[in-house]
Image 1 (spheres, rainbow, N blue to C red):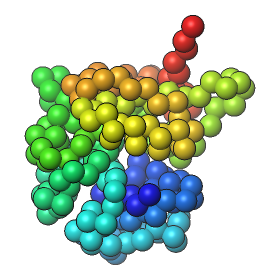
Image 2: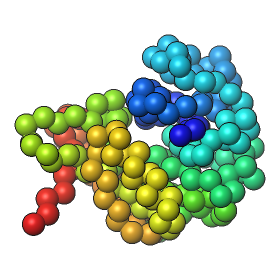
Image 3: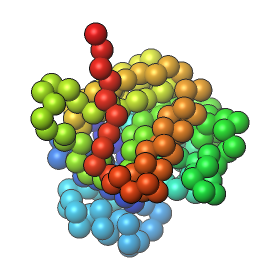
Length: 212
């Protein structure tokens, strides 16, 4: 599969690296090819292909959005028309002061992205944890139980594609419903941050789903 990344910081870089090593063709959509984040990503994995944003998005089947939330419109504006009909994986979180929800919990960040690119198939995924768990999703000693990756989106086919990528990356994908559920996933991210970072539990924990 051809996959483009808009944003290759703490979240985007490890996901891009691991997906390329799983056999996907992975592009970095780089407005500034010599930027620190792009260089660090390609130093990690020389097989990542650096392209202009328009070239990367045009060629990709799936696009990962992994920028800071405040940079979303700037990042998407040049490629907005090219996202029509494509899967856009939203890995962002609107985080406000004191680890509050950046949109006052009135609407999810994913829904605001969908409003900005109405013809893309936005799927919320690869949030609810810190970047450390995207570096390594392995938790041994639990038998066949895998860490859960909760996703949300309005398009069933798009979600199935993203769930397949989740499985490849070692997660148990859980479809929580339509894109409005993203608000709850963003709150789960804030909960994880508060436990891991603020309370000092550390990044080495995840959620799991047990079923009878």
